[in-house]
Length: 136
Image 1 (tube, one colour):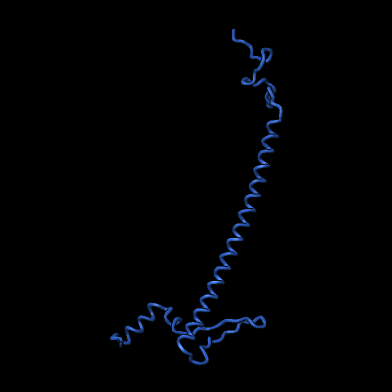
Image 2 (cartoon, rainbow, N blue to C red; image 1 turned 120 degrees about the vertical axis):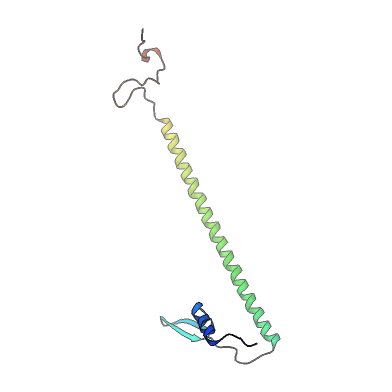
């Protein structure tokens, strides 16, 4: 299969998609040695082996990555469970504090006179001696 496009069309394709050059580059491996980043080309297999052997190696690699992913998911679930447990404890403590404050405020004696001017509060008359003067 040969492409029927002109060289001009091929060069415009690279301009339209700047990532194509990166995709065509040989893959690199980054490693950290003595505090410095080392960049090396990834080396392919040293010798060609049979298709079955390559498929077996690929299957083992997929299995290894699958196990790694399962462990990571398990760790994330454990972290979430721990965070949820801590959150529930914190919320329970906050509710205890709220209820204790509510009980404390309910124990405060109610006043029948205003703190501002000392006059009796009209909506808190329980007996006749504190009742407001009649308008007769």
